Image 1 (cartoon, rainbow, N blue to C red):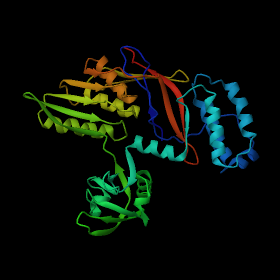
Image 2 (cartoon, rainbow, N blue to C red):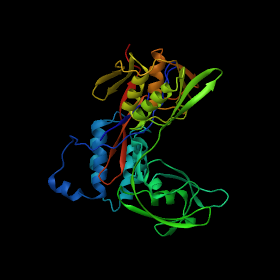
Image 3 (cartoon, helix red, strand yellow):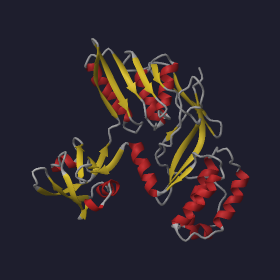
Image 4 (cartoon, rainbow, N blue to C red):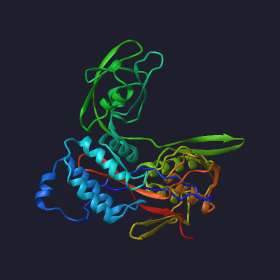
Length: 374
């Protein structure tokens, strides 16, 4: 799997900012070979992770200080060392990446990579509840139960208090620790002890499933005599385009006279998600152009599949990033929308994130992207 997150270069007429919102990638790379004894010695070892990092950077990086000859020499030094633990390997990886002079090329440990993947896919494996530690009672409390989720099917309700998770008392856990216990592999079971407002107690065994996270929220707002469709897009996940399509269609059925698309605080996400969403608003015109390390130049354009031509206003701020700025710039440059807000920030580079064999990840700057050619 491979997904790419992008950002446009800073300029007065371009709305841009980069973000490392990506999916994992499993790849075969062509690099200077090791002897078979050396390969065998590294299998299932921290040293193998170091070499995986090296190979990906050598093959893809366009970082400021990347020089193939220097990186080849660095490999000899890295593989001559002994790595007793993964933590030792992680320190060496981070040190090697710092030599590239690129703050956006970075290493993610397995926990960081799992979080990143959940954000980008718009999915997680769990039971479908939102929780908080109640400020007054200090008790872990259900705030919301997602529709059609395992939690809803099991009868979990908002305001239920979760007293135990698989026998662990939640009063001794942080919110993050409780969330980690509830999440798990799809098809596995988690046991909750719940207390209701009427003080009744329930023991529930709930089977985890894939939960699609809502990234689009929408509704109708009345301004004077006009009905306006308001859509907020929180992130360009793999489900964002589908959710955006449904939002536009539902609001059209409400006979709105125009739309407001709110991208404020949107950290970006997947390139293809932003392209798909742009095509829902644009009947024609160029969207974005990407240029990779080998000079490969690709341009994405509208394809006459717009589902509305009603007036559109797009809201942006200093935290609108990456894919959100691709969309905003395309809509603005093609005179499809009016942009309202503050100037955003850009770094002009493209990152991909690779999954390493032990579940860790590596974000690498692989190319740059630009406003499309007119």
